[in-house]
Image 1 (spheres, rainbow, N blue to C red):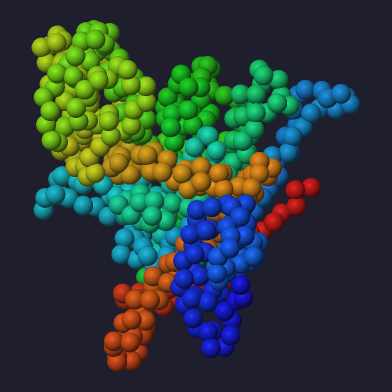
Image 2: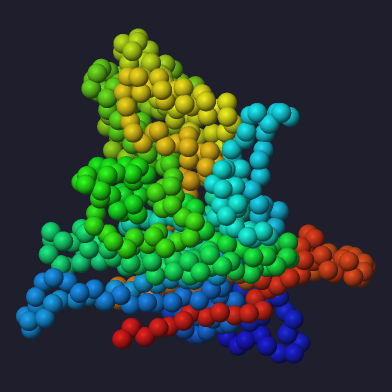
Amino acid sequence: MEAAETPGNADSLWVPFHNEAEWELVCFLVKNIGHIRMDKFSKLDINGMLFENAHSLLKYVDKLHTGLAWTCEMIDVEGDIIAEDGTLKHKQLELWWHDPVECMQELMGNPAFWEVMLYVPKHAYTDAKGENCIYDEMWTGDWWWNVQKKLPEGAMVAPVILFGDKKAWPVYLTIGNISKDVRCQVLAHAMLLIGYLPVSKLECFQKKTQSLVGYHLFHHAMSLLLHPLMDAGCQGREMICTDGYLCSIHPILTTYIADFPEQCLVACNKESRCPCCLVQSNKCGLHAVFDPFGKELPFTNIFACLTPNILHQLHKGIFHDHLLQWCMSIVSEKEIDACFQAMTQYPTLCHFKKGVSSVSQWTGTEHKEMQRVFVSLLAGAVDDHVLIVIHSLLDFIFYAQLQQHMDTTLAAMKASLKTFHNHKHIHSLQHYISLIQALGSADSYNTKYPEQLHIDYGKDSYHCRDNKHNYVEQMALWLQCQEAMHYKSAYLAWRRPCAATCERSDDDSPSAKEKGVSGLPNVAVLQMSGVCSLFLKRVSCH
């Protein structure tokens, strides 16, 4: 396979490949199989085979624009167990990361978000008198207005939203300037992977200290990862936005989306305590972490960054683990199953013909289907006071899922919670209303969105590695190839409609040329063209 770099093909859409067929084949191979299978595929007796092995194929993929550079930073951990040579055992761990400010800069200037990007907070009302305020996007919340007042005139806020997961420990980043309808779509590429935190069993420590050391390791790694946000958040960073203007942007950590165990890890509290509330210093409930990563971040209250979790907290925790189990203890599992099995079949309702007690793993959709019929199924089977508790709690859950809130819906949500708390009390529910007023509706902070990203950035990248040694580095290299293919695909999606339009149009006026694609300024389009190439930065592990 030879590069298509002859003068006649210098302007080809498919460079460094010869034609569309070569490009489509490379796309399929890079996105779907690993290096070993590429080698096996290249040995097949197929006429016109384009490459000899995986290495020769990836040499041409490396010529594509690959996005931001990966950096590997070594963390030396010294344990408290004495080795055979009389020294303390230690372990070197790898932190792979992108610069979060550069990632945010890429999102701010991406022309694909031109029509869904906002730079200033707004107030929206349902009435002309301004008495019923609307809360949906982040820019309609109170937090943005409060921070904007603290910045110099002309400065703009970029609310940084982080997602985490403790299993493979990837960390994702997006910004609140992008509309939630777009940033929550996986295919929109509005959530960027900024790092893999080190995962270790910490066997160089005694078992009684491993838990606390794990807290220290997490906060140290996050401090290294988010260090660029400190200066940029205080001083601002000049960036080209999607509208082509150069602005002073202040990236400020606003939200950390995670399940409850990781929220407790971020807040340094034990899982028997609330990660959002303050506790007295003499009360047991905190872990001794003296340098939490949120301490030095400007304008950031890390406890206010921990948002409601509809999937794990409401559907799985409140409804399934609490309400459903409570009702089963009242009327028995057999009676609950009989109620669901006896339900009349209807086209828009899910029929649980085997009941619900025998199911070991539920999805968020199945929880929603159960909630739709739960009150009606238990009517007559439980006491009226129990039915009031069920009704009020389900009302609260449905209100919490609204994509747009108003003062009236928040008042109804508060009334439902008050009715529920008159009979039973769950502490975590009291934070929902204040967080919606501060950061917008809770549907955009659902953990189901980053869980979809784990398929690409965790499972797929792990399964495509060649071996188990240095697997994080292999995952980073594989993801770099995926980014290269994405950038090339985005460039082709822009060039081909544009070329077709130019062939049909004789308009050569300067105004038409300056607007570029769909009225976008050329300065924004350049970021999709791959004029600058960034490659994986290999850092010595010694």
